[in-house]
Image 1 (spheres, rainbow, N blue to C red):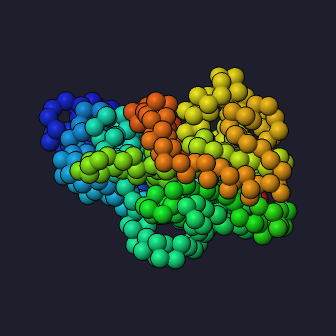
Image 2: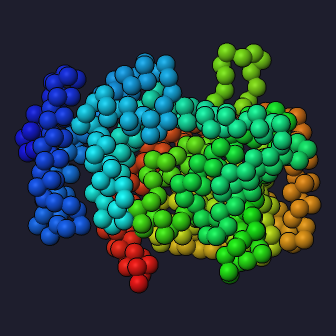
Image 3: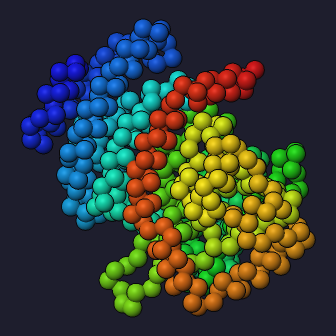
Length: 438
């Protein structure tokens, strides 16, 4: 594919550009095959691969800037059905060949360490940047992602009957009107991985679907890790070992956690417009922080209605040091605190201890370990008040309208993909893998 080819493809109608894009993608794939696998390329081959990637990505981005809504309406039956992130990319790949990496390319990348991947996350990032930038498509996708998952719907009768569901890394139990999700990824300090995100979304769905659950609580379980054995830990953030091994999914983790279970904690499930009277599909949530909330754990606190922390706990957002973007913390921390603190924590890596005066911008109550259970129960009883749901709904409408979040996610989708495949993150991934191998 040449620059002239890309330029020619920018003119003409939808069908003309569609054919040109498919042809360019076929030529791109053929040239990559000639250059060999990414980790085996010498400097010249690597430079050529970067150039052909750049040409195709410019072509894809231009096509989406003109035709995204046409593509999105086509695969969603004119907005008649909601597709989750992976379902959407599969439908687009089948209906519009060349617009996204094909299944063969994705399958070849899947088992590789992050440093050895081709970087198809960037192509998905270009696509979701365009989807979320479009008000019609973006809001439709966000609403689709807040629908209950099929797994949760299947488990709901069991939870309603027994008040308990045990998932691989989360334990859900209802006591009275309070439903508590205990994170049980205990061997790795509740670090987040693909399974963690899936289990958390299932558990959050069940709390929101269950009419007997009026308040949700999230707390870390008791650890098996030698350093914290017998202690509760809230979250160690993203599982860096999985990240460097290439096992953290761009779609099912980095995007899905933001527009899936975290969005559901904040905004609730997608409402049923056909019902009357209208009831907000939200519930109040409490986070209980023991030991620490690092990275993704700290991000999570910013959508809770009440955050209770143990006096010896701390929060931190080291994503900038790790080379990636800390989810939606860049959107939310400055709003809940101030300009200087958000930069101090996100850009400078400042750790906030629970007893630090500035921690009040994230934490509501700080108590001794012995008082945690009582404080959680007291907060849950207060938040079970009938008027809380409507007032939470109105607070979210005022503080973070979905359009604000949608525009943020447009930029996040692209820049997180670029960060994931940036030279500094790749170098860290390679060093980590070599250290692990030794």
